[in-house]
Image (cartoon, rainbow over all chains, first blue to last red):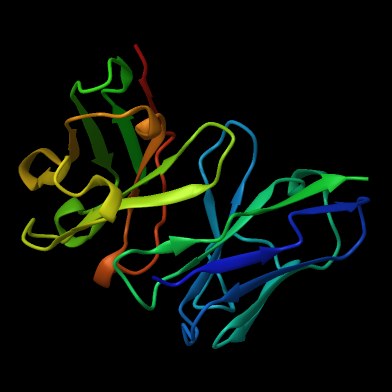
Length: 108
Length: 119
């Protein structure tokens, strides 16, 4: 089973600042990695798929990079609605699909 | 509009059973893999099971093998999760999502149905 480790657990930032979230896989997943956003009381929403492709309707301030074992989600300038929990998920070695434990982006 | 609506959650005693349903609309259901993901209260996401377009290929996480069964009815545009021998650790929000397997990533997700296993 591929273990995904996200860091940091919590990121405290102000609106307008840049957010950089990390996801590290226990073995190579090539580019088969997605990022999801979850706001309180809502279902997760797909942001990025195949490591660097934005899903339909996702603003350009969200970008993904990386391959192999190290991946990054960057939010270039935080908007109020971006304060949420972000999860990475790998789709290379399944079953099972696995998720990271999440990074909470909170308002500083 | 793509839509997934889960139902069937509720309070059940340990050892009991529940059947979750997910009604799909706005897309050709029979063309997609479908997935169940769960989330324990205050915790992260856990993939539970997925099923191919035809209902032939099915996969599940080890912790539910032998207890949960995923199925689908393409004529009714519906996905199901039969949950037996429920345990306290099965408590959480259960989401259905389009995708997984050969259908790629999960998009969209339903709003979820809450399962509580408690005596």
